[in-house]
Length: 244
Image (cartoon, rainbow, N blue to C red):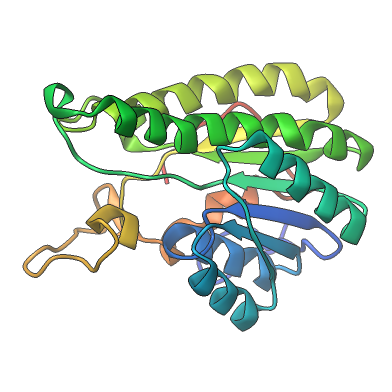
C-alpha cells in the first residue's frame, strides 16, 4: 500500500520529471506549479503576465517562459526550448484560460473568438505539441483543466461554458488516440475557485463566501488531482474528468 500524506492523498515523487503548466502566473496555475515543484518536478511556467509569472517562478524555483497558448508558433518555440534544455517532457497541464460572464445575446463575436482561442485552441495546441516529445520520453500525462461550467448550463456562461464542454470531449478523444503511446489524458473539473480569474482579475468581492462542502474552494486545496494524475504510479487512469 502506498504511503499517504496528511490529507489522505497518496504520496508522489516526480523527481526527474519535466512539467509544463500554462496560465501559471497566478491562481490555480501558480498553485499547480508550486505543487509540482514541491513533488520534485522540473517546472516550466507559461503565461503572458510576465511580471507575475517571473515572480512566482523565482519564488518556487521554476522556469518562466512567455507564450501565447493560442499561437501554434509559440507552442513550437516553447517545446523546442524545453527539449533543448531538459531533453524530455513528462507532464503538460493545460490550465490557461480567460473567463467573463455575459449573456449570449450580449456576447461580442471578437470576444467569443478570443476566449475560444485561449481556452479551447490553446488546449488543443498544447496536446498536439506535447505528443512527439512525450512519445520520445516514453510516455507522459496531459491534464486539461475543464470546469463545472462544462458539466451543466449556467447563465452568462455561453462562451466560457462552450469552451469547457469542448475540452471534455477533446480530452476523451485524445485519451483514445494517445493511450497506445503511453500518454494519459485526463480532465479535472473544478467548481468555483477563489482566484483572480473568477473575480475579473481582482479579489473576492466583499460579502461573498464559500461553503467548502459545495463546489467551491481555494486553488491550493484543489490541486491534488492534477499531480496525482500526472504521476508514474497511475498508468491506467486516462480519459477521466473528476470533479475537483
